[in-house]
Length: 488
Ligand SMILES: Cc1cc2nc3c(=O)[nH]c(=O)nc-3n(C[C@H](O)[C@H](O)[C@H](O)COP(=O)(O)OP(=O)(O)OC[C@H]3O[C@@H](n4cnc5c(N)ncnc54)[C@H](O)[C@@H]3O)c2cc1C
Image (cartoon, rainbow, N blue to C red; front, top):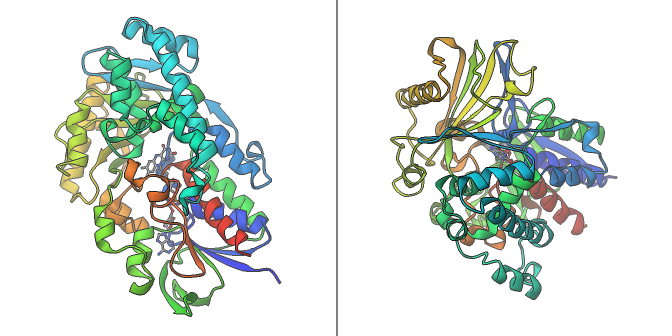
């Protein structure tokens, strides 16, 4: 008889864990709180628009392809990718907008326009970023983070020192570049990692390699294509999905979860993978004795930002927007301080606008624009409707200023989403959007462990190794599933 495993949560990490186990001969059931799969990478439809709810940047395509290969699958059998060119547009305060080209020659020319020898300096910077990326993928990303000897390796340590990976991204960038634009472009990707560039180790300039060398892609069918493909693969291997089925409690016998209440059903279980919010499950569902971390521990963690998001259906096209648009027309440092220091609402926020209808005719009715607007904000803020409305007005004004289009009377669909929705929908600790910040003290083995004190429970997802983001979520599912397979 097949051994069985239950997976709690059908985000990308849980879906991947389910596929990996099922492919390796396990009987798998998935229990998901919400009515659809994908977790933060879900979609919803309204008024003829299809909105991706979370991720919008498809980066590191070869890593995602590898994850499909590890399931014995070819990603291209599920969806196709298109490289975006330009990758994105940046709106500045005092300059014309900059489009980031996909090809290296044009990119170097762009940097030459920013400062003397800009292109040459960029080439050297990206060469180091590639080395860091290769080290991270080869030596860290696929390690379960359980023992230091997994990653302590003299060769890696020597190259790490040579590349100064422990100094900050900001220092690394400022040492090499002088122009405000070059610095802003090179500091931007680490903002995904949940800290100011001055506090993220320069190891993470590997993200610049992902951004500028590997490129920004768009999956046909939208960002949820990955979750949809994984669900199809899981079903092909006989995985059973139980939706609207939140884990509510567990019964523990001899240091093992023996049964659990999911929705209104009491089910027995052999082994469990929890991909739902790590903090929520430990603090609210497990008996205290089996919690690896207490509230003080969690409270001392540095979280990546939460987000105020607007999903807007607009009844006209906005010519001056690209698919991805960064509104860097206000002071990054001032906004960053409100997220990481004062934990307050920003006065003059930077924001990001994704207009997937520029690339994909299926996400909006003809002649209309699908907009996803994201303002990074501190976790756990009060986010009442009056505040949300105030920020929408700021966004509308700034879009008008830079594109000449006032969308006020053209918004035919609007949904807002913020801290309290992350808590409500995903049980997200402090309403976090992207998990823990990737500071040095919260990297690799220093993240909450995938292994629990319970003998038959492992965690995966963005609060454990390797961290937040689409590729890491998939890897996390593989790591948790591998622990079960190895313990056979
Ligand atoms: C707004 C936003 C934008 C992002 N942009 C990008 C991007 O552009 N590129 C990128 O690579 N990454 C991006 N990310 C990060 C990436 O989407 C996430 O890191 C990744 O999707 C997390 O997957 P996960 O499986 O760890 O968690 P989740 O997707 O949160 O999955 C956890 C699942 O557990 C379920 N659950 C919770 N409690 C229970 C319970 N009690 N019982 C059962 N189920 C439960 C939840 O409903 C959810 O479905 C973004 C994230 C957000 C929020």
